[in-house]
Image (tube, rainbow, N blue to C red; front, top):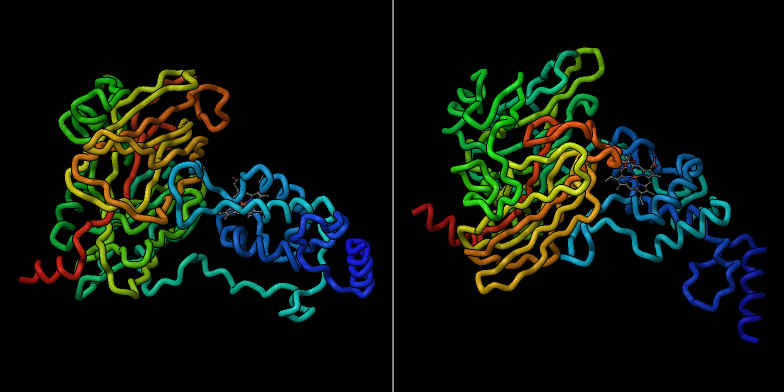
Length: 468
Ligand code: HEC
């Protein structure tokens, strides 16, 4: 009886031209679902989870900011969200909780599903806005996903039409007169057609000359294990093969060097990688007078010379900084993936030389990367999976920022196990008939796990002690 009355009331509401309210009760008759509309239900979801990329001049192929833009893609959107292909997110939710977890909630998926199945209706304007603006328009896209306090750009760089695989090192002075604390940073490619990827690292003023000299040499990086073609490095085919880095003395690193490498990286630009925002209280330090080293991989396949001005935007820490951020990059550099092998296992191991607080993780491989798991083996012997990426996709390079930072004590071993698919079943595989080793070009491979960590020492105490 009550249900009947509600049913009739809803009908009256509908005839009156109102939008039905969001359906929450299980008992609501199914027809109410047909009143899921773009304006009321779907636009808020898309604006929260999609338009950061699906807007003009951003990384996604189409803009999804208005009903007119969204409608032609309605079915495709439904398919992608139901299969959880969009928004992109590749960490298995079983292990770790992450601040930037992009996954939609089940309810949000159900709303999009119902909306498309019931005809993808526009619906009336939401109560808060006028008819002419059915959903508040986004600010014109500046390209940034953060609001930088300061932007540093490289001088205009000519990417010649012959630069198909070119690593450039460009140094930009910050002219900071004091140490600066960086909360968030983003690298914005000047021309997405040619900037394959870019990594920006911090280099102290006194080290720049040394770096320039090194990168100025035609044979930079060449040694008994590495050779160079043009501006990219490769592992020599005859270098010893170490697939199981954990069974080797160097953990998978080049013989005689550790698998782990300390690098201070405010931000990178990689496919699908947006801004990096550290949790409050955690920040990266750029010392007074520091330089920003842009390592840019240009890849020009357009048959035309292109001018690029890639830049980095920095957001200064607003609140007091408790912990300074650093990054360990842990690699196996010595593996060999046989031709046509569809499940090749490679490991790396690195034992932490000091106490660190875990802040964020990144898994890095190239086109043949299949899955990657990293676990911590604590000094007392117990083990914990930190990150599992079950379906790695080179097109998406995510950094997973932990919701709860935690201590990894000195002596903890970080063990990474990666599998590669070098078969023809891997549709991204450039050439299954080739065995593959480490190399800078994307059609050669890498196997890396990066840990963003914080120094457990609280910054104020630390900096006052260093000033003495
Ligand atoms: C981090 C950036 C990003 C976010 C967030 C994002 N997308 Fe995408 N989307 C992309 C990129 C880049 C592509 C093209 C590459 C690809 O297909 O993997 C894409 C492709 C798509 C496609 C086309 C797939 C195909 O088969 O051609 C659809 C549909 C889509 N996205 C919908 C969405 C929806 C809906 C959301 C939000 C719920 C969303 N995306 C969130 C970046 C993003």
